[in-house]
Amino acid sequence: MQQKMGVISPEGLQQSATAGLSRHLDSLDGKMIGEVYNNHFKGELMFRTYRRLFGEQFKGVKSVPYDEFPIVYVGGDPASQKRIAKEIAALARERGCDALITGNGG
Image 1 (tube, rainbow, N blue to C red):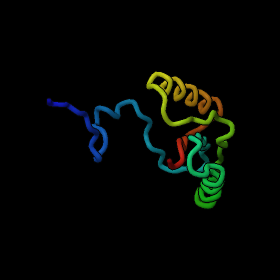
Image 2: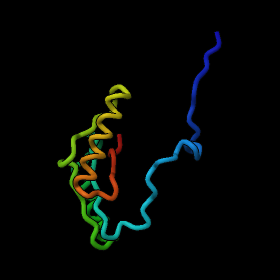
Image 3: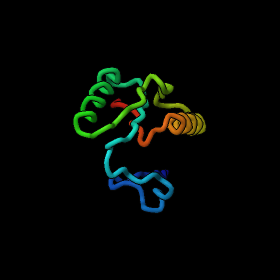
Image 4: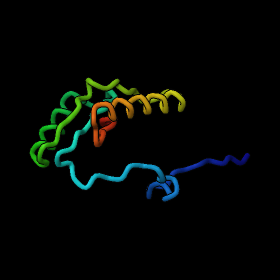
């Protein structure tokens, strides 16, 4: 029996698959960063640490803490994942986020 499997290269997605994605920010100076927690690996500690480190390195960087966004659990069906991602993106826009940290280990 032959089985056909799809794989994703460790080199990343083809350029055409990345169309429509946001560009990387040149700097986090003066930016608002949203924190989206997936309930893995000590987010309470890690996000506090990220805030401290960003504050030390970037001028005027601010954050919208993870407890102002829904916790996103890994798993679920693709339709639910897409719906939740859209809800979080809308919340991030409302709160003026320039970037998001999504997930935390796991």
